[in-house]
Amino acid sequence: MFEKRITKIEINELPLFKYEGKIVIAADERQIDKAIFEIEKYDLVGFDTESKPTFRKGQFNHVALVQIAIPDKVYLLRIHHVGITNSLKKFLLNDKIRKVGIALDDDIIALNKKRRFKPGGFIDLNKIAPSLGIENIGARNLSALLLNNRISKNQQVSNWENPILTSPQVKYAATDAWICLEIYNKLDYWGYV
Image (tube, rainbow, N blue to C red; front, top):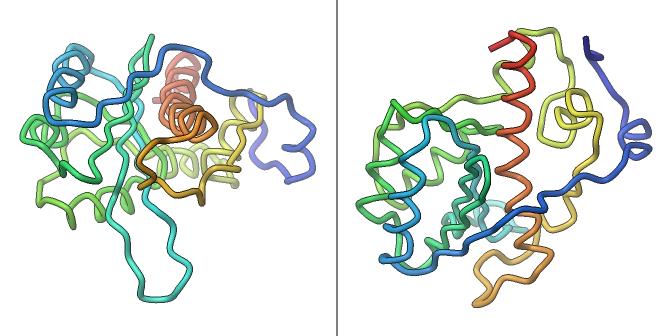
């Protein structure tokens, strides 16, 4: 049904794929609470985080952005200044809402440095893929193998603490959460999850 491995050259030959739907940026506690209220209506969401990159060993930056995709919208929660609100913590604990992402262990560790919580309902595609015989993991590889499209990672090392996110940052961040939902839904359709 799908290939088990792919090369960088093969990925670069695929058409570019990005999220084109509605994006909501929530930057204060009230906006984040409103976003979480809507997100909690769903039992399956795409999930990702972004932090300002570090370029020196031992340097660490807290999570600046949490991205959550629902079927018709992606929320970008700017937690750099407000932290993990009570509503966001409740969402992260909720094991009835499946939060599908890639390399989630790193996201959970980083979020726990901002505010302690016991994660609930997280599903890591990087852990599912090898059990299906897939040799290349990560968002770019899984998107190529399972959706036959290429996603851009150009904004990955941009400054997620910027006072205003650029349009390319917004598109990149939304795509990263949405692509997780798309990959999971494809695997579910094929009966693999």
